[in-house]
Length: 382
Image (cartoon, rainbow, N blue to C red):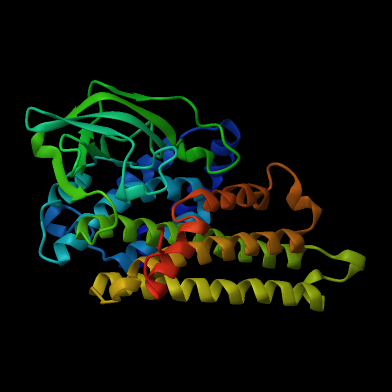
């Protein structure tokens, strides 16, 4: 199903028209969420039998790219729900249906949020500062999660922590908590430069109990090849890259529109050779970003074997995409001129939004370390 059949021009225009006010008021995209829920966007990965669209990763990435071209913060937040659904989808393709409940519940309208990131935890999925204490077959989680997108609306929160019951062999524990679970507090601390409508507030866990039936994985501390963790990483990096690619697409469009509108010295800027070169260069860079995104999404869907280079390829995709798009937005602002520097202009908002790409995993340092390890082996720390 083409992305344009789900995100119609009329729907995209409604989403685009709301984005400036969400940003100005630092307000959650409640109306956008309801519009997207009505067209089945929460269930893109769910099979028709489960009540969804039955799309694969390449098609969902295309949807996210199109959505981000209209409402970047809305797309970024919905991304986190789609990451969990995508993990369930990829595991199912490999014969593991242990997360099928995510796809079924998403089709019923449940909203899954991503409670993974922690302050000061550079290991991300391979270690945790959150305590996971065994409790009646389940676990009680205590810690702090940051950048919890969809904070006002989630109904299911995917979290993880470390069970140190055996200090010689600690384990990481992943599970899903329901909204209303005692011990979960959402802080009202989201007041950022960009991506404001995502309302990615901090979440405090104080003995929040996840019952045994909602504990989905136990993994070792440190790098490992668990397919669940690989699924989280791969979906996060790929769909995140789709969002930023959509921002770049929109920036090129706005640059072309500005060139047609501006007439310095009475001559259309679209006829100026320097302006034409800049717009062409931005479009060429976006062509490369889009082709890489599509190739990675196809490979993940097909189960391509990139061996030890998969993590390096995924972190490289994210780093290259966010760096490329940031430069493309800057180019578009140069083409549009000083008007784009004023508050309320779409390019001004896109520039603030695109800067968020620097703060998502994988970081620049992490991506380079991952590639170095793939090429040279682990560094000798002794």
